[in-house]
Length: 307
Image (cartoon, rainbow, N blue to C red; front, side):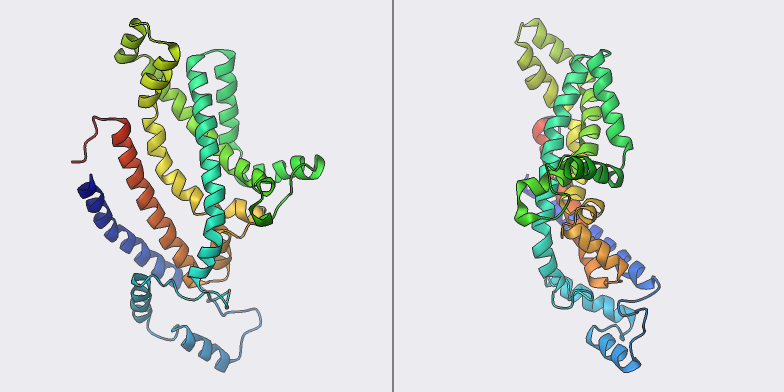
């Protein structure tokens, strides 16, 4: 297995390099720059800023300098947050994004799996139709609509939860962002689990387990659910990477200074290094979580081999 992991990590290097290269040149050909303001700076000041950040050098030279710094783990200075480097911003924001995303993913996995199993066990009943209707609602309402609605109900009308802010990571401050992030994931996981559970419950080994008189809990959880989780595990790789690296919409609406919010600020202000750092971070997370998913896949299904 270690050989397989090492081979996958080495194979991911060209992928990350390609993503970095494309992102670097795409953001540089976009109009505007980090120091283009509504009231233009004096020419000498602009020239000094460009010299300090190497923006007056040829694009290929800037690309080479960025790659050299990136290989040393240096994302460079932020053009907008002048007193911070991109690495320092990530060190401050990433723990918040990971807490929100990890909590939302765990909540979605528990609730979505339970709802999907219940719907499959009660196929074509009122419970099944209710759960699937709720999942459809969760899928069709976007986060930027759900977040203000939840804030209006729980923060403004009822006054139970704060409408925004991090609050030093207090649970009460994380409730609404986590719930908003988790709702669409609950819907997706519930639908995936229901479909695969229906197939698993009709499989021969589950029928055999029932014929041997095993308890219903063992038949469902041990024999049927294990195989039914394979599509959910496949989905968890990109979902985890997207959630753990910060949600642009949720962090902006709830005023949480996570990585997703930095990405928005960086893109709006042409903060090249901050946007590039976010792209690199997300691409690395996607690679790592897809690798973890493949390892979990083989653990759940022994027929999968590391060949």
